[in-house]
Image (tube, rainbow, N blue to C red; front, side, top):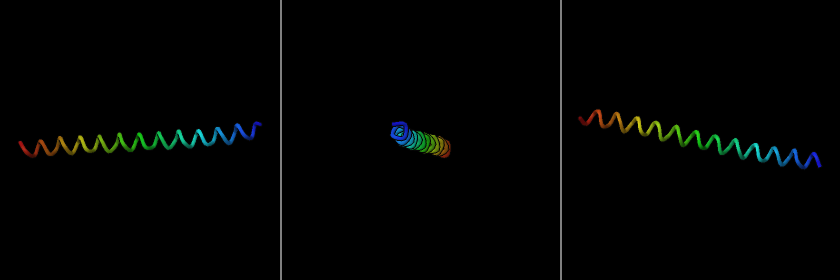
Length: 45
């Protein structure tokens, strides 16, 4: 029983980590995109 719970816990942890990483990647990309947009606007004016 404990083994089953442990494997389930590991799967949940891995899924959680993947979600966390993807969220960070999306956040980083959006931030860099915003910075690029700001620089582009600065260059335009």
